Length: 104
Image 1 (cartoon, one colour):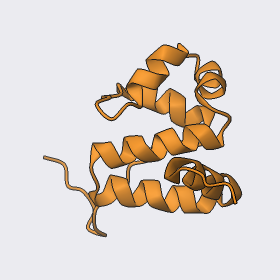
Image 2: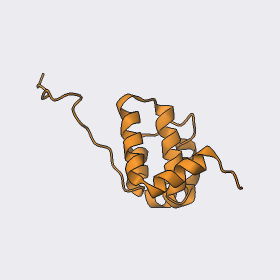
Image 3: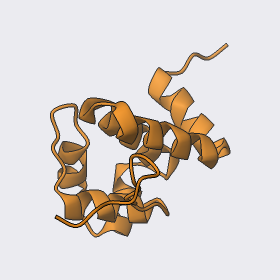
């Protein structure tokens, strides 16, 4: 029996169940940490063909993408949106509760 890494197993799960990836990302955005988000984005990058393929789709240099998604990465908003777009995803803003926001 061939063993595989946790990241490879998660990439396969996300590839087979994209809704799971959305749930995980949204959960992290709700109350997680940046390191967790970067881990999931690295796993999703594997699910979408690897760094080279995602970098090409996102119009980023593969080295830049690798560094951006590293554990110490700090992606700029334009890089993050390009990476997500390459994966068919986007960021969205939602209210924390059902109370409408009031103008200051």
